[in-house]
Image (tube, rainbow, N blue to C red):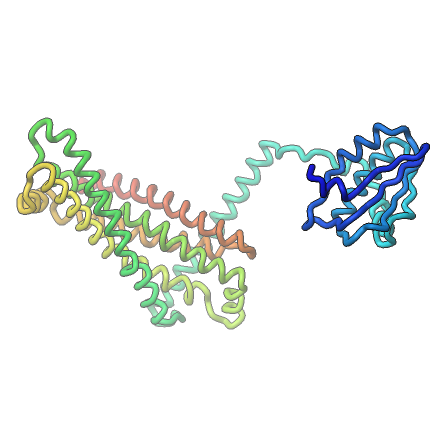
Amino acid sequence: MPNEMLDKYRLTASADQLCLQFAGDWRFQDGLPEAEPLLQQLRSHPAGRLSFDSQNLGKWDTGLMTFLVQLLAECSERKIPVDQSGLPGGVQKLLSLAHAVPERQGARRKVLGMPILTKIGNITIEMHRNWSDLLYFIGQIFFGLLNLLRGRARFRYSDLLYQIECAGPMALAIITLISTLVGMILAFVGAVQLRLFGAQIFIADLVGLGMAREMGAMMTAIIMAGRTGAAYAAQLGTMQVNEEIDAFKTMGISPIEFLVLPRLLALSLTMPLLCLYADFMGIFGGAVVSATMLDISFFQYYQQVQSAVPLKHFIIGVIKACIFGVLVATAGCFRGMQCGRSASAVGFAATKAVVTSIVLIIVADAIVTIACQILGV
């Protein structure tokens, strides 16, 4: 312990009288000595009366009170009488308040873990509440779309254009990077095996079909879930915290129409276009690998893709992208509207929006793929 800490107190003994002298400032910001060394000194002396000398005591705060409470508890346990008259008046009053009501026996009992049945019950109740809230939210969106078709939806078209800009052109950079790299990775993976059989040209088939049917729509949806879906949840969650959504309801404006519909329409309109762009960039990435590693010209690669990937595969990818766009927007807005009233709740809402979106994307992709297999598409 530093010397300046030891200088803050000194325990002197005379006959059976113990005197604790304080000096300097006793504040948390100045650093405080630990009570254990003093308690050890107290145990080494024969039991006697303890008094205090605070003439040299400077400024103090609750740090001094914490020190004294530990000291008085030790004295009480060792049956050492304490004379508090040497302490400042404010300290004496606080100590009397601290000991005015004795601690209830058993108040510090350990908190036991939650029983497994209780956990299962809480999870079940939470799942039921989420499903009921989601169905109600979907119903509100449905009625909002009906009002939109009848020309009665109340939202600003400038908000729709702004949301389209945020979900579309502003996402092109990340879509370009990820899609190109995915196409290159597919080409690399195919090249390892197809080069063994001299069938390098079929890399165009692998990349083209993979991007058109699956990876283009899938990667675009996952990117938009992490980028746009989380943003929707955070925006609406912050409005919940600031009570702006309650203000809309008070003014008779539907938050679903004014806030959710523009975001839902924006992402639903931009997702198919982003999917087609991702398909093109993925195929381009495969062409770069084929031209640099396998000596396949861009023209040969293009001819092979054109013959191996008919238009129906791109249409299937676009249909998936439309479904994914609706799911991502719905999940993001739903979690935002479901957000609590604290700053941490906004973070949880954004996290839940991303997780919910990705789960829905995977499930929807599996359902559409199975339907295509059944229909022979």
